[in-house]
Structure formats: structure tokens, C-alpha cells
Image (cartoon, rainbow, N blue to C red):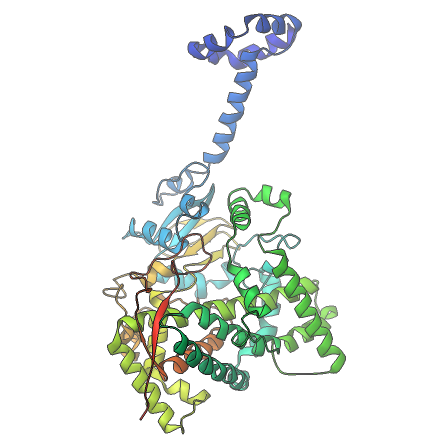
Length: 540
């Protein structure tokens, strides 16, 4: 009786639900009486406890949903558990499309607030404020705010996600890999792969009226990365069973198991850590651990030097005693993984997206081809490091492709201290994450009239000077911008040169128009791929 008297006030309010009480009290009245007489909880008390637990869970999930209202910052209404990320978490929509739609709901707001599940995030739209975050006040936003468990996801512990201390050290060591001098040397390696790519294109074009542009581009860029970063021949072009290419596919393949793990990681991170299962396929982890170790051991034993990424990572490994943090094998392997993924996938995507747009705009295709052929004629039919730099219209096509189809739809930064945005009076706390919606900025008619139309002339010198510097962020900006951007430019443009100097590219029955982003993908990818017809050009 003592236990019952103690708990009775807690459930007093339940007497206001007569239907619920009647239903269960008349189900087993003898049970209730016996439990009450014996000093145990009755069914009503148990149901009340369960109800209170559910109320407590719901309160926990929604208690942050007034965060932005308290600060006077607008934002879309969140949904229970998912916040504003339901379609993304369930794999029903592409991240960039969802963020773009939310941005359009607040056309005049310099910023607005959203919720990633129950966690507040701030989306910046004002380009001056974006410049402050990326450049002017970089010291206050020097981190990405990615919570990576190194034991579960060792390959995710790379330059793009590292905290400031390790990022600053590794960035200083890896940056020399992409200087102009190094790029000139690597250009010769890229060119070798591009020559193989050109031969492969002729073989494929003769066999089929429809070519999967994403696949052939990925084979080319995989070979480039294999040669320039790892110093090995990956043979993705020549060998249909190339291990490098197959691993590249698995890196971005979203299997049902991986989909569920990604959902758990984004919505219930504590459960993800408890499970201890990585979203990275085990065979991918094994491949990179094995490959990087074998290459490092070989370079150390033989004294071989190629001036590539493996050499740089080997030097880092030897310097472990000079740092005040551990330069573990996993940390070094993660850097190689990041360059592989960033080097092959984004450039392959850009090549295929450029061809997709050019196939629909033959006038633009003819113009860029004319520039390429004139340059080749001036250089005895060959292409070199300097001649690529002189192809201004090709570069405009490259930039317009990345404007219209940026592989990464946003960039994130986390505040390293409490920060007040200039001219707003709005202060955010330390560790709050800020999203910069690249895709939305690139599609803003205030910067790009008729943004859905592919127009390379947007990137003429005159138009670029007239536009805000933050209106094009395909590689990010500031100290934490894409380290390999210069490499990506040459790799992509050389691939386009090989295609357009030899073939007329056209749409075909398998070409999907309009372009629709595949839901549930980590980077921009069209539904159904990009299939085009290649017709060999008869050169005079």
C-alpha cells in the first residue's frame, strides 16, 4: 500500500481519460485489485509510466525546435525526429534539391535556421556574410564540425574533416603537392592516361550507338589518380575487372545495409557508435589499408621516389616523432583515400555533365571544339600544360558546368567560438554548424539570370569581375578550400579535349532530359546516368 500511495499523485491526471481507464480496468479488474493489495504497480500505473516515458522522449526530441524562433531567425517548420531532413534521411530526395527549396522559401532573408534531426543548423545566404565565414573571420570557423569516430570510420578521418590542429599541419605538408611546378610534372602523367582514354573512346564508339559517359569518364579519372597519387597503373580503362575501378564503384554504392547505417548515423549517432559498424564497405577499408601500406613499404625499402602523393605520405610517416599528435597508419591512409575519392569521382562527374550540356547545345560545342582544334594546330597536334591554360572558352565551359551541376551541393563550417554576424546582431554559440548552400547560390537569378540555362559566357573576364566573388563556390573558398582544385582543372579539361577533338557528342534515345538528381546519393548524380551518342569527326 505504501508504494501505491507514493505513486498515486503522479498518475492523478490520468483519471481525466475515462475511456482509457475503463478499457483496461475492466479488462482484468482482479489483476488490478491483487496488484494494489500486494503493493505492486497496477496496469493503470504501468500504462501511465509508459505514457510518461513517451512524453519524455517526445519532449527530448522537440525541445530544441524553438531555438531559432527565440533568436528571431526564420526557418521552415521541423518534423518530429527528422527535423528538416526527413526526405534526405529516408533517401527520397537529393540533399542539394532539399536545401535549394528551403532557401527559396526565404528569398529576402540573409540566413535562416533549420534542424538536422534535433540539432540546430544555420544556413547562410548573404554573400558578404559567407565571405566573412570562409575568409575574413576564418579563425572563428576553421573547422568543418564533422564528428568522426576514428575507430569505426578510419577512412573518414581525412583533411576535409579534421579538426584545426591536425588539419593545419597536414595541409601545410600536402599543399606543395599541387604547386605549379609539381603540376607541370604531373601533367605528363595525366597526358599518358588521356592518350589511353582517347584510344578507348574510338573502340567504344565503334561498338555502340550509346555511351555511358559517367562510366568512361570514371575509368579515365581512376587511371589518372592511380598514376599521379599512387604511382601505379590501375588499368581501369583497359581492364574491365580493374580492382581500382571496382573499389571506386563500391565507395559510392548505396546498398540497403549502407543506407540503413547512414540513416542511423544521421538520426541516432549514439546508436551508430554503439553498433560499431562502419558505413564504409569492409572491402574498401581493406583495399586502402593494404594498398597504401604496400606502397609505403616498397618506397621505403627501395628508396624509390616519384614526387607523388605516396612520397609525401611516406615523408609524413617518417616525421611522426616531430608532431605532438599521433601520425597513425590510419590517419595517413585516410589522406590517400580522400585524394582518391575526390580526384576521380568529382572530375568524372564534371566531364560527363559537361558533355551532357554540350550535347544539347551544339552551337556551344562547335565553338569550344574550334578553340581546341586551333590550339592543337598551333602545337603540332599535341596538347601541353601551357596550351590548356590558353583555352579560355574551354575553361568557361568548365566553370559553367560546375555552376549548373556542382558535385557537392553545400559546404559546412563550425564556429570555434561564440560569433556575432556583422551588421545583424545575431550571435551563435561555439560549435554550432553553418551551412553554405553552393547549389542554391549557383542557381540564384540575382547572380545568374535564367540560371537553368547553360551559358559559358557567364564566366567571361568582364562578367566575373562584375559578380560577387562568393557567387561561385564549386571548390569552396578560403584556407579550407579544395586542395586539389588545380589538379581537377587539368584532369577534367584534358579529358574534354580528348573527347571533343575526336567526336561530335549528341543526345540519343537513352538520354534522360531533364536532368534529375538521384536521391540518397552523397554527391550529385543523375538518375539513370548520362548516355550520349559519339560520332567520329573526319579531320581534314
